[in-house]
Length: 342
Image (cartoon, rainbow, N blue to C red):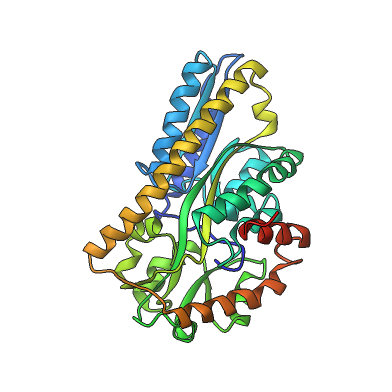
């Protein structure tokens, strides 16, 4: 996760292969009425989490509003794979929807990376400004690719979790830092910025921490708590490096199988649910930090000089991000919005 692309991690790390297989074979065997529309929607969110419960609320209200003609089947816990798998399965029709973060969203449109420029988008207010400025254009780009946005939300703030009480850049650069294994050059950006980046799959984070292959990572507080990774990294640097945004999407061809009048109501339901979830996530993130503190986590805050050093590292990466991970105009527009400029 870095420099505009924040990579999500599966909360439940040990996925059962048979879950993925049965998910599709079972569904295909079920009989549906000629009017019914079934939307299979996957997410990395764990069962019982705020995100999962929110989807369950949408499913229930959709069923009621459509008179039983629209069924939302939810597959949490990453049983459909990570977000790259979800995107691929939506493209080939095995899934019709997903609740994903900006990492999955950027696999549809790289412009989505503009939502998560590190230490530029560093508060809820700046995130709201940037997302508000870019959202209409992003939705048009997605629709051109056959993807309809149902709602937008948040997953929290990515922070560094480390095993050293010193929050200085140079100290973290020496750590064995997990970065998402990908082919988009993200790991190279970490390394070019002086970090000892260790590219791994998300399923290797826990064993990596257990064996000492890695001893640092950046994640949201809710993920670090749910996965119990914080037990191996007793310090959290209190510095919002970048936001992890959320978005719920459905394939356009499936969406348009639903009568237009019904779609209007279903979209309203989804948007209302997204707004409720956004408020909930912003509340429970602080709770997650408090829970980890009760279990021994130490929150360390960079000094003013240390924070300036972090800013230098982030800002030095901007020329590498602009035009590669994020198209030039989108990067510039996001930076202006983050600063509150027109």
